[in-house]
Length: 371
Image (cartoon, rainbow, N blue to C red):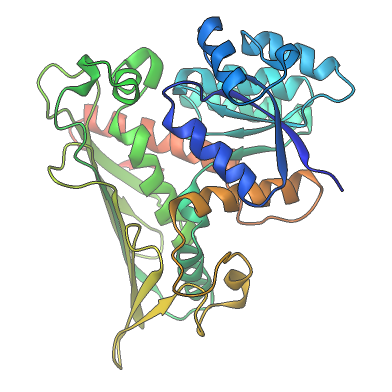
């Protein structure tokens, strides 16, 4: 068995997420980066590929050329990572899937539900895998929470609360040379604001851990910064078939917050609480008895979770390892193995449906809409 030959589209000079994906892919040594089209600028793409030691003949000036030429090579890439602005996710994914190449794509899936649905059809025809990097759902203590809920430890779910708070866009950074902010502030490139960038993370986390989707949703999109073209804050409420209620709050203008993603699920027998900035710990609050914490790779970890811990208890793991777990499981799946917790097209479709449902509800004054 050899490393999977991989390529990357985007992720060149000045990219944060490109470096994250490359580190994650290397962490378990299952991939070898051999090709790339690292920027929409051919000059930047060339420099970026040279800095990553990519051979000249596989350091492409465009993703279109890369898809065609790599598919024609006997030693062409088996999988591509897409780390571009949102508007390019679907066109690039289609090109590589149709050329027989598996896809690992950053979230959200795209800019509209319609193009996401069209991509789902391409995936089915191509017979190749599409993986979406919802990395928080791959953190060990998030999966610990899911396993305990699945086992019935907290009883019937009554309430789900999730929030993702950042403060970095409390200034108009999209008007500066900040690369991360500039494309996120452009409707043509991002498609959605905070709801797409971090709201979809919160939405997917709540659905993954609870194992539940709502039957009705309502919400409100806000733009707190005058002149900004996209939303920078979102509120949503959910109703579930079992009578549970949910709330979601995502903001990129929450002063002083960095990356505060939190999930609380209240059950009839116990409640659980997880905070991304303290990823080693899952808090459990039984109805009878004292509250306690479960730690990553500790004595009380669920067996289905323990295998993904890379270091002994007390040696912190977090954000990068979440991405690495996605890549590890992507390698397993591409090789024909089983990776049931790996997010893919279904999660991508749900994320786009969440964006469009809340957007429509907001336009209609916060009306409840069927999910």
